[in-house]
Image (cartoon, rainbow, N blue to C red; front, top):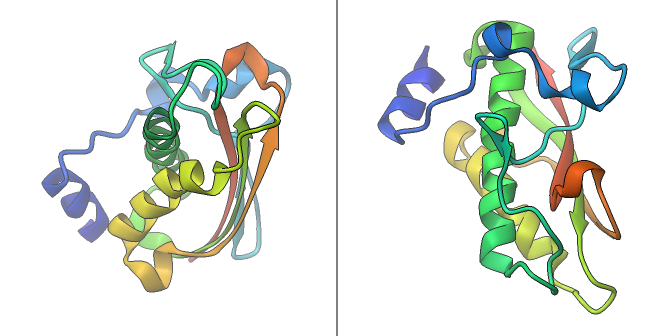
Length: 159
């Protein structure tokens, strides 16, 4: 419950995917996560809050780096909820292994890494740099479902 206390101090409230169902079902057939041994693979997470997409659009066109960063940070909060749904207690997370991030952007937008930092900065704040920073790749793409500007796939090591 140490991580839960830290989230409360940070004034971060996690969505309850147990009560509201993981939003992936409306995006097609998939499981919200898959666990094999000590590895937990989350399906894609997006910047959605209370059923609303936050900062829809395209970086370099109608969105700033700051808005992308905010969307990535919210996606991180949703990933924490996904981890909690999968393992019950966020203290069971040993480490973030890696994230694969997708940023919707124009071909001329070269700061996708700054957008993804919204996610990784949050994970480092919550779990500490040793556990919260894993490998990371960020890819600029032309579109994501429902006009989301950011999506991540997160892999964690869990107890």
